[in-house]
Amino acid sequence: MKRSNVVIFVSAGMLSPKKRDHILARRQLYLNYGALSLATILDSRGTETLLVHGEHSEPAEVLTMLLEKGVFPSRLPVMLSIPSFYALPWAQTFCRLVRSVDPEARIVVGGRWVVGPDPDWLHAKLPEANVLVPGLAEPVIASLLTSSPDLRRLPASTPDNALNHPLVIGFNRYQPSIEASRGCGMGCSFCEERDIRLEKLRAPEQIASVLAAVANQYGDNDIRPYFQSSMFAPNEKWGTALANAVRAAGLNISWRTESRVDALTPGTIACLAEAGMKVLDLGLETASPTQILSMHKSRDPDRYLKRASSLLRACSVHGIAAKVNVLLYAGETTKTLDETRAFLDEHKDSVSGVSVGPVVAYGPPKTANILLQDWSRSGAVPVDPDSSHDSGISMIHLSHDFDAGSAEAASLELSRRYMDADAYFKLKAFSYYPRDYTRVDFDRDVAASDTSQLPFAFPRTSCPN
Image (cartoon, rainbow, N blue to C red; front, side, top):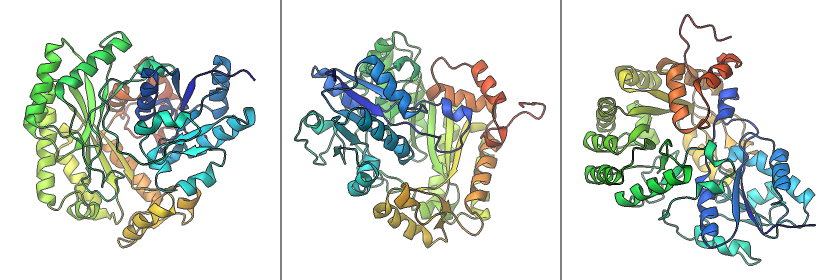
């Protein structure tokens, strides 16, 4: 059997979207920047690498493509990254196919949120895998190519250099990623990074240098990078320095990031707008004082909401589209949801869109049971008690007011209250839709969709079907 000398990175896709299965959801692309970081390291050391994303393609289609390119089978491992538990079924099928085509293939599986909680549980789900890497792989990536892999959980800092986006098959379809910092450590009960310390932001001059390098990779400034950071929390001095560095480099690039509503000041927002920020994903989660405390978002709900209000208005003043994340949480009641709705109504002119959904417990029983036990005190119970063991995804009946079905209906209603088709397209096209996906493409897909599943409103005169 002829073998290549290429390290193949595969980002596991999903057999169906994680929220609602409709055409628009299947168009979305998510660059696996963690896997790309590893591929970039190996490439810089002279090892030929490539990264393919499973997206919503069948696993067999991806493997066939690798065979046709002549990169599989390889003398070197197949590096399979599982970015979420929703990608596990895809990964299971892909591993079986790899093993059936090449019984001698070495399959190395990573994805710290999926592997880390309980490697033994995952190994039972993926018996074809030779190696499971439970932590960040940057410090040990070279050893993973050998027969003696180093599987220690070692700390890894934010990369200094730009990710090598051309290593991604079809990279021009994806918007690029720039890692700004790692970690959070703010203690929100539902967050996987609640106990992971927030790293210092990369220097503004370094960010500007990376922006220029990525623009060069794509051949133009018509890119919309996502500044990856679980909690982007620069101060005004940093924002001013970034604006100056971007200006000095002659860059005119619009970008997007995410943060908490209490992590940025209006003054910083003004500086970031000058530096090119156009979209900000804001983790409001709730405007109910009761739920703010339950989520451990803040010990002072009034202060939290005042800062949220100030930040939203600052985004509006400075031309930044604020996409607000709302989480229907354990113990949610009609009253607590009304409080969130009232806050959003008050600020609707400053809200460009929303992302709404009920909380989910991720992970095998070893970790999920801790959350489920905590949530049970608020009256929440899993829809299926066996789901954490079976899939690592536990859907929740939130309370007597909101079982899983009514929570989903409330999520759609809230989303449609603040977002129409125009707003939805603008936000998704900025970061997640293929770079060549046009409004004409979008309208065609809407017309072919079951509109009852779409999370945005239509004009009353519209007849999409």
